Image (cartoon, rainbow, N blue to C red):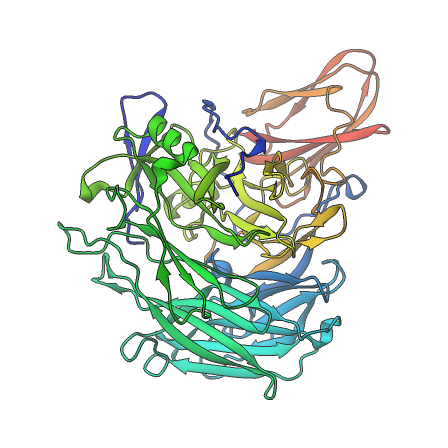
Length: 639
């Protein structure tokens, strides 16, 4: 539950979230200091479009590097609900890109079927029917994740295996009863289908049930890892946290995976007032390529820390494939300049407040990197440690916290400006009675050699809304060897997909194309009915060069500076100011990608032309202006 308290400081707000849910390298490139910028946000009108937002048709294909290709469909969006699930992955040896999703009842056997859609031609074409890794005939599958097992020496897509995990419902679909663990070759052969029930799927002896085996699924050679839990709650708060590490090893003789389960319990401080443990419910998990070394990173109150009146990392390491975990030295945030400066700037009590782990990976040196919101702690009171301060009109500051040869360091990745939409916000923004909430889905990816780390997330232009209801997709690259964080790229601004990208998944693996890098990103429809069907799309053309910029721009701004548009937002008309003669085509598109207005304007010298929007309903529109020299596209809000 989100609570906002206005403080006396003009640039700060306080937000509360229930807790239960070699020498260091100096980062170059983008300033390591977060920018204290006051932005202006204007409220938008109610969007006119109701129901299922369809895939738009590109308005200028030749000018757009970014496009979206249909992958498949699902009965509803719950298949992509959890950003920590491995919904998308890739394998560079075979060139396979794979997305896992529930079915859309197209085969008549229910939405609990699990399919792995895959491409072996850089995402331009997809097979969505060959690899059915779970059948809902008895126990419907939910919340799937996917990893790829590629046998040693194999270079063909057909011979690689899709590995999927997730929870199952009872045969009556009335509650959770266990998990599925499956594998199948991409040609549809050699399927292995395991399901376990809670009473037999335990870890650490008896009594620790393996619920929701769905987050941080990963393949490391012939070994596989995914986290479940046996967290306890009283119906309102978590009272006890237990992580279940599912660790699998490929059985070459049986074309299947043999799974073991290990219990791990974080060393959170028990709140003296509530009697509950103070921490977040799920850790981040990353395993090294050897399948033996790995790390669990929790966020909560650490009894071993010098300062335990704040939520901060608790780090555990395994060297035996997850069977045993050793707690590492207590995290000392005060020794990290970026974090201590941030705490000084934002916190009245001089402490940082870490959010839960958004994603986690390793770099080429084997050092852990995890991303998390880090804002300023609001209070020293043990009952208020879930509250934090952040600049007004910001959602929060996301940092990369990472190991070095001498300890830990951090840098600011970027700021997320718009707030997570909850059900009420979504209701207001989309005009629907039934919609889900989402976050910015900050995720990470690396090249196969881990020399480059990439970040991707969703954020909304603050002109459109203070809430993240009209998201663009942003990416950013970090070079590990040079400690350079490059400028972020907005992949969708100025394209037909501007402000219309939802439920993003970012593959954990990026293809190294030699001097350029292909990032793998999917989005899904926003169906404003949470039980309604959705389509899934792959974003083609997301290729960055050595400076972290698109190799061919997604925006054709050859007319930028020739034409300007105002006012924006507007309630009736827009003015186009031209400073060059010629004939210009002006097309206006709605959020469905349909043309709602199209006209040719002849301009002689400097001229201002007016386009009427009076007959259009309130909402977001794309205005494309083009002539023989090029084009530009700009979004406009009518309120």
